[in-house]
Image 1 (cartoon, helix red, strand yellow):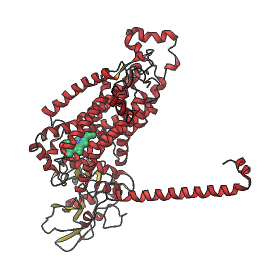
Image 2 (tube, each protein chain N blue to C red):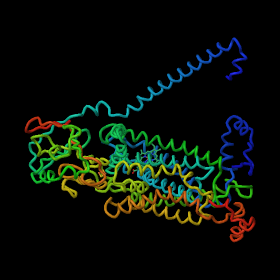
Image 3 (cartoon, rainbow over the protein chains, first blue to last red):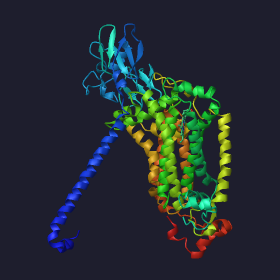
Length: 197
Length: 429
Ligand code: HEM
Ligand code: FES
């Protein structure tokens, strides 16, 4: 509505204008309500794709480690992913310890049992007092392949998919993978059992 | 395109008239595929659109019958494929048609796309037509990927793992997106089940976009090897019988190639690892995608950074969306662009080279070569195409499509230049 029309309408003008404003308000309010409603209706369709209750229920496992000798490793499944449990030799640990943290591609420990900012020293890749045990998600942090044991330029793991090399502490040394392999939350229950998750 | 060169639909019976005035479907078909004028000089590269439509139908028909026997469950999927191969009547045939059909579909799509690149089909006024084509290509890739997961072999499983993990490169929310896509913390039953649902859905979405693609085509009309728009009835022939017969002949030749693969080399394009059941504990030593995705895989692996690798891989397709605005030349067909024509063939070689490198292990010289070719791939779009339009001196073009076919070659190329006395600025760039 232009200025002149408003003037022409004379005394009726303010009324007409109030009407228009109220309608605008109703229109916008209805529109907004419908938009919020539509967005809320979409959510169940999106959220149904997230892990369901049965997948979330399998969140921890207990593993018997009493039969693993020094230099041996076993692989167990946790949340659909392989976890390596490796009883490392002194030589392997020495090799990992000799590497300055500054030389690492990823300087963060990626250990769920420690502070998220803990540096990626060999000690921080396990838990205090049990440094010989490396318990780690054996999943390449590039695109999720399973690296080969005791392989690669650093004697730890080698991912054949796109060529990532990990050292004996599971830390990324060269290749496209951005992070050290992840250490899941775990706890030694006694000499025989460790609980993962 | 002007559409009154040939007589339009005229219902001949009372029933025809009755129907036509209520739903002019026959009219739409007649006017689109019988009376529709096509340039008289189309070559065989212009038959691949029709071939692609038929391939889509082949995939849908074989897919729907395979779905009657396939079981989308992690414990049974692999066995159900073997059941199809051994027990189901003609199951082996239907499956081989479907799995080789995917390859043939992509072969046709690549020829179709490179045809567009050569003859400048993406240029004004066909930008929307081109963009719809790129959308179809993306949907095809998604469909083929979901389909490849269904047999639940080793390659299926690890392709699903690697491809979904690409999304973990997204900062902050990447991991959540991957979990959401998988329906778990690793590829498993929820993943297989939803991929099956999507594999069934997407081909029908492709069919929908194809309809839009053809609609857009029939608004602007086809290009042709001269790149000159249709100017008069002299330039065109009716779709039926001319294009119909030519398409049918090309299709027959294409189907012979297809049949050769289905009957004599049914597993040649596949990977032996996929006849091993999925094992979440062991990644095969060489995981590679199907041949039609190798060039993009090479781009992914060429980059040492995870995020950048993923960005460039998607970028190598996304760049096609803006191609109409990157090519600055006003001359459409490479036949009249002496420099672009050479760069076109270099580009083809680069794409094939990337495909070769995508199949090789990501190490040493292969990675270096992949980096060089990836750089060239993007330079083609962002440097060469914009600059060529400014510096290239196009060859004189014939005055019309009819001229180009009816007059002897030397006269055609000489005529327009002599006529106006101009190798004029308006023909340049
Ligand atoms: C755009 C069209 C399509 C493409 C490119 C495509 C591609 C593929 C591919 C590459 C495979 C794996 C083949 C193998 O290695 O065994 C596959 C499998 C399968 N597809 Fe499709 N497909 C398409 C349409 C459909 C449709 C419409 C259905 C209908 C439900 C379908 C149902 C299936 C089934 C049940 C399988 C598993 C059986 C098998 O692997 O042979 N597909 N598809
Ligand atoms: S998944 Fe391990 S290097 Fe790519």
